[in-house]
Structures are given as structure tokens and as C-alpha cells.
Image (cartoon, rainbow, N blue to C red; front, side, top):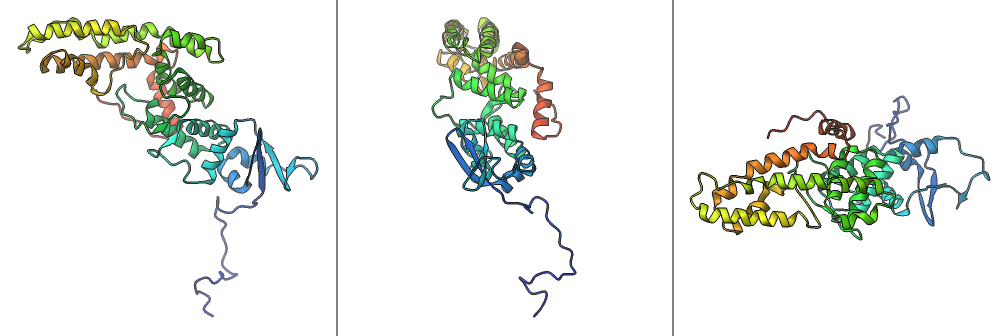
Length: 335
């Protein structure tokens, strides 16, 4: 028989090399219990993905009868939520469960995986969870960064104080401080009537920061619309039509300052502002010319955003984000 034939065992004289990470010394089956939920999983695969479980499984196990077992397998009790543990384990054992961006995912699943991958040392899935939050708009280099908006939000709607508080709590828990400015900003856009009842809860200190930021949001909203207080532009051929339109838009702005949601950061290309002015009869010159002023005012507010909430400056936060994501230095963005 040909010793080199396909499927033939290697000659004894050839040194065999165990491939690191793909040579499991044990395939211990363990049972994970979280409240009333139980999961029976391969300890070898879990140890290969999680540094904490690797240490746990490698540690000498107590003798039989000294530890809890189920169906002959050791039981590990975790003090996390069953939903988070299920999402964490499915992400590890089912490669199709938690796909990279831009695959759609549930917001609660992303946060659950984010927390537990941080807690149990699973770096590649932790970064994937962060990538989903970044792609969905929770981190930006500038105020006008685009986002994919690919996460679904289930019971807690996307636009609610409870939703933003969940982001804040998770970011603090996993030491992702760089996610906080935008999360705090969104929390501060809700009215006092919506935020005051939450002051007495466990997240009261964060709600207090949001309430204190209201004056900054009002000032920034006025700054991004300051062009409405000026006269028609010199290239305008219809000041008799544009000046009344500008006055009407200013009146609308003043009424908006008391709206339940106050959002001084303009939308992409400040299109909503300009569309509103155009609908009131302003010419194209008076609609297009203010864009640079709006951009500069919004950028100034964005630069100030971290300090409003007592956070480090953007340069420091960007460096934190790069370290967390394993990225190289970024080039400065052009205006």
C-alpha cells in the first residue's frame, strides 16, 4: 500500500504538531444554571472562547460529592440574567446567531452580549457588540456621522428615557466611557416631565445630569438657528418674501424650545431646517447660504458635549475607543 495515499496515517517518524486552539485537552460537559434556566454545554469550546471559563475549567475540580452535579456534569451557577446568558452562549455556540454589522440584531441581545463578553473575557464578541452600537449611531467622530439603524428595540422603544439609560448603564459597566456623550445627549433631549419621575431610581444621578444639560441644549438650539435673526442675504432677490419667512421660522423655533424633545444637533446636511424655511417661502439663496453657519454652530456644540456631562474631551474619548477596538491612530477629519 502506498504510504502517501490519501487518508493514510502519517509515518511514525514524522513529528506531529498539536495546533494551538484546535486541540482540546478535555471536552468536559458543564451545566450552567441561571435562576431557573439551565444550559448543558461543551466546556472545551467555552474555555476556548472565554478566558474566565478557561481558568475556571482548568482549575482543579473538587472531588465527587463535594460539588453540585446534574446528569453527572458539574453545575456552574451564574448571577446574571437568564436572557443575557442565553444570548452570550448562543453567540459562542452558533456562529449564525450574532452576525457582524450590518446584520440585524435585537438591541437587548447586543447589550447582553456586550456585558457578558466583558465580564467573562470574550474579546472578539465584545468588539462585535461594540461595532453594532457604533454602527447604530451611539458613537461618532462628528455630529453628522451616519448610522445604519439596523437594531430592533422590542419592548423598550428606541426613543425613550429607559432606552438611553440602558445604554448608559451598559457603557459604564464595560468601561466604554466613549459611548456616553451621545447617550447622555439623547437622555437630555426629553422633557423635565419625563425625566423627573426617574430621579428617585437607581439611575437618578444620570437623570440629574440630563436635566442639568437642558440649558445647554436650549442655548445650542438658538445658536444653530441664529441665522434666522439676520436679514436676507445680499444675493437674495426677494427680501420682501424671505424676511417674513425668516421671521416665521424664528417664531416656530421659539415655540419649539418648549417641545418635549429638544434636539439642537441638526439632521444630516441640516436638511430639515432648510426644508422648513423653504416651505415658508424663502428663496434658494436664503435656504442654502446658512448651511455653513449651522454646521459651525453644531460643531461647536458637539465639541463641548463631553464637558457638559463631566466626561473627558473628545480626543481622549477617541483614544479610548481606538484602544477598545484595537484600531490604529486615526487621521484628523477635515471640516
